[in-house]
Figure 1 (cartoon, one colour):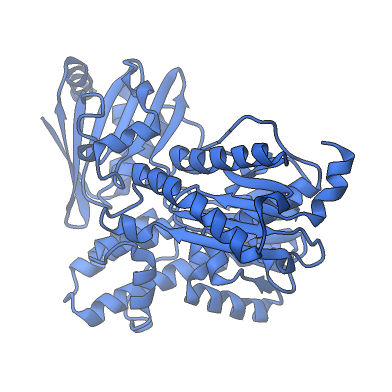
Figure 2 (cartoon, one colour):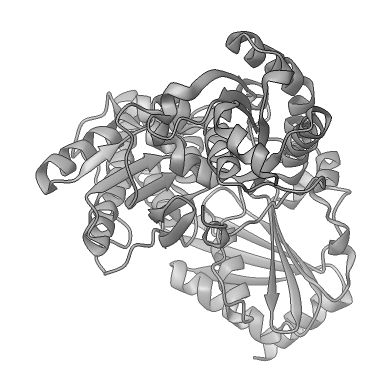
Length: 152
Length: 353
């Protein structure tokens, strides 16, 4: 388990950039946190640092967006408006099973059972005027990413 | 398309079908170039907002299922309103994107099949083009070129309309759409879904100047928007307040003023940059009273004219799809028998008319 204190959005961006530097292939990252905790800001900074050249808008209304980040295929999901995991069938998410893809999921608890298992779970929470982040690995891939992050 | 068909088209009404998100909308419109609004023969709408209220948002599966249940009864209702039978139709238009894929497919499949059965042309319409052209349904419609502010739950953009079908995106949101900012901020302050309109209503009781939030990205050049950071500002202000009912209204007022001021500043810049004297406001947030009043006042001051669709054509509806489709069908455009939808679709890549 790793912890960070993020006094402002610049700190969230910097943390995402550190993650980007150690992501070297497919990864399933769950992003937990309340509305406004910085999940989309983190995802945007991560995708941009990985080389996505276009705008990374909030996927709250579109539910899912896909990007190319260099050689990497990336998916950015926001399941905030999903009430039941069965509804995900309509989104055609079979491609998420691709082990070589980067999959970022906001509000993953709303898609329980219909999503690939996480390699890493990042929790963001409000703390005073800033945020606190906590990352927990759930697989060897996740442990490897956190290990490299610790060395960097 | 056959020339005989083309010459026939403007006089035969077009059925329009909208099903990209919450609303199932159906309308019938006869293309009258000089006064498009006069050709609107019927429009029927079913909103799923109440259905979704229990779930806190738009639920894709429910949305698709409900379009299935509502679409054909709405078509019958529209035909009855117009005093017509299906055989009187000269074409069918449907929203082909952008939107939720399951919801789009319901409207597209039904509309394409109807056109095929009636042996009339069909056309897939870009949802945002529908919004852009909705003000043409009003008396004294704006003539291109004009600038359009498209603001809804999923979009915040400024678009230059050089001609019908020729669109250039001048500015776009970097993160949250304006309507999304309204909905999420409302939720943060404990209001029920759909939060945006409720927040605006609450803001009417708020005191001006009690809370002031930043006008994002107005301190630098450019026409892009960023509304995501306002959430944090509002949340902190709300949490650190006495959380009384008056304070809730004051915070709502401060938030609404920040959004409206930002939109107005960018609209003025877009008009200046394009040298255009006409501003069209479209999309669900276009129903916001303070936005309408502030833009109208800015127009009087700067000398530009504002064009608002009536409130029911600000939000998703079938009439705007019938209109955009009728214009394109009258220009000889149409498509083959395949049912195609485009959940993501660039407005700037449309075929000119």
